[in-house]
Image (tube, rainbow, N blue to C red):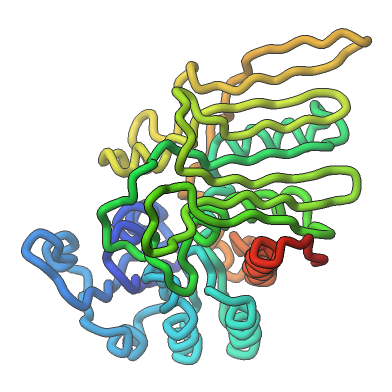
Amino acid sequence: MSARRFNVGIVGYGLSAKIFHIPFVTYVPELNLHAIVQRSPKPDDDARKDHPGVQIYPSVDDLCQDEMVDVVIVTTAPDQHFPLAKQALEAGKHVVVEKPFTPTSKEAYELTDLANKQKRLLTVYQNRRWDADFLTLSKYIMNGSLGRVVDFETHFDRYRPEAPNSDSWKYKTQPGGGAIYDLGIHLIDQVVYLFGTPKRITAFIGTQREPNPTGFQDSCTIHMHYDGKMATARASVVSPEVNQLRYWVRGDKGSFKKFHLDCQEEQLKAGMRPGDAGYGLEPRDRYGLLTTVKNGEITSEVVPTVEPATYAEYYRKLARALAGDTKQLPVDPDTASLVIRLVELALQSSSSGKTMDV
């Protein structure tokens, strides 16, 4: 007897849906792309043309009324995440929310409570837990190669000193906008995934671009204080480097330093898809440097990036959770809610000039 396939409905048809969700939904056999909500199709941007045979709806109301839909994926701008996820949960659907979960932790915890009440799965698309470089770093932390970690740096730096000419929410001053909600949220999530809840937060959030008439906060540095270690998450737009630092992690037995971003986003935007030869595999010139201390001698070696499960693993785990193994839920909504709370504390720290207790 074949395994059940779960029907997926996607809200929104922008970059997130096209690049980060649909390719993986259609790749995982247990999932079926059943419907897409696209309010305003254009001749060169039409879900109906791109996905013949898939139901295309003009509104979320229509999607939620479709009894065939098992799970709804919300890929809109963050200020719409809460009302749309709430509507889908109230309609009896399981829900995946694109990051950032919601603009406020109050909304995040309310959705989590609603999902529990409705007995429906709720999860957040923190896909960078499945970056190959993060999996590589995690391996060396977990197997003790670095010893007791005392200093953890995670970066998402770029050289983009000019304000982007884009209407994307990512570049607007609005709820759930700014660098900390866009890129910082990934970095904070990775830290929390590895080390749990920090004790305190000190943050500096603002703009590095000049001029910046909108006041858009394009950069952030967040220091997360733990007992015996400091974790720093930094996203910068004025970083003129040939090779951008991604990780620098130091412990009492070794360190790991890695440059370059994970290659999956770059490959997806270039048209590569999961299952294609070479997808998710880093070239040798992007491998990281592992330094270890043995018998008082410090040595370094270039180490290969692990072969990743890729972002497809997020949806494999979701399919297993939908089938009844709820321990496989890829991202726990309580953890995702905590990450939003940490973002709020970081914003408070930056505006007040104070370190905030968590």
